[in-house]
Image (cartoon, rainbow, N blue to C red):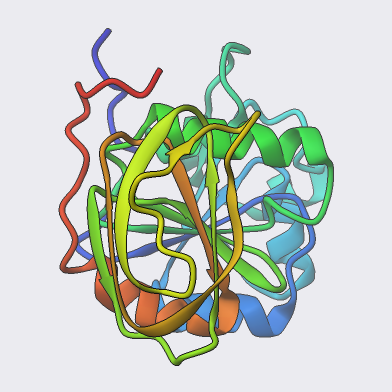
Amino acid sequence: MNPPAPVLTADGPVTLVGGGPVAAADLDRALGLAPRLVAADGGADRLDALGRSPEAVIGDMDSISHETRARLAPARLHEVAEQDSTDFEKCLTRIAAPLVLALGFTGGRIDHELSVFSVLARHRARRCAVLGAEDAVLLAPPRLALDLAPGTRLSLFPLGEVTGRSRGLFWPIGGLRFHPLDQVGTSNRVTGPVELEFDAPRMLLILPAADLSALLTALARAPHWDPDCDAT
């Protein structure tokens, strides 16, 4: 199946806002790094409450209020009626950008949050960092070199079977076979410059949100997953 046509194309990072909790300070920080703004369906109401207006709203439009919809130009509304994908997936597959910073997709319903992480693995060639009040979560790329302060919390959570190698972690991951029903890697910590490598697009990397800038710097140098590699 051919990918959907982009709704928005950008040379730099894009901020995507969902309908979950979003603090004004977190949104301001994201926009400082990714100034173009998109809403996922009801995320437009979240932005309206924060005094912001997205340049595009993407989704099945079953959550956006009539009042917010009336305040937006029709050309900004991009309805995707099919129900086989979530609004987050509809957005991620229609934003052509080197990186998406996603806010408002954590801290609400757990089923929604879990579906977001599943989408990250299915669309592994699209780079997206999901930002919460305390954490930044993304699908780890094949290789990543991070400059983090010693003692920084670094967690790894597998979405399937995956192996990897590391430098700069208190508990090295080499030789471990990760699986969500067996070995996970939460609450590790940094001892020095970090180097990570994974053999499959199945590992979530979780860092403190305060280290977002260092994460984005590292991601700019990291390779992407081949969209045809196996993530099942």
